[in-house]
Image 1 (cartoon, helix red, strand yellow):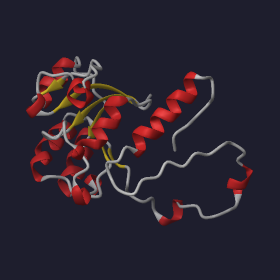
Image 2 (cartoon, one colour):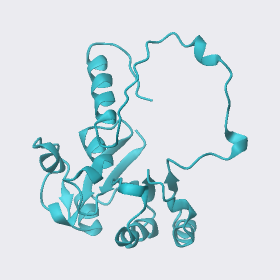
Image 3 (cartoon, rainbow, N blue to C red):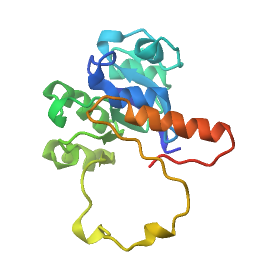
Image 4 (cartoon, rainbow, N blue to C red):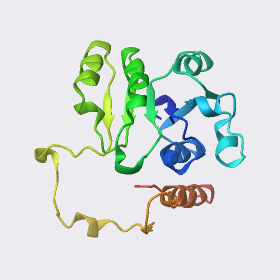
Length: 190
């Protein structure tokens, strides 16, 4: 596990635009989710808002409330929305700046790279926070190309595909992986 995290949903927790948050609330092996910041759903359990199943993840109206509720030990702030076009909404930027200035690292799957924003870079350099854009391509010299090594992998592979966004591809893959694990089958979601 990488560490403790809060999720930012910008009022979208109950909508498809928060599909990243939905997957994280349903389960993640990487982070221990200790809260969600969403002023629209403040005071609720994130799982209850999502699908009626409480998961012990409180929804706070502000970053300060989320940090107090977690005892202040938060390593990561996860951008939990995936709006059309993948652009970071302007109204979320002050909240993300606040996190960075507190030394909380940001993880974003948006197409709008936070690590390319000069103001965010400056704050991160001062606080020691990391800006992690998971969609950002690696530099060309770090890429690897076809070698044929995949033919050496003998494990069963299951492809999970969908024809559009927000259909549940990640959720389905997670359910298959979890079910396999409960039956003693080693499974990984890639």
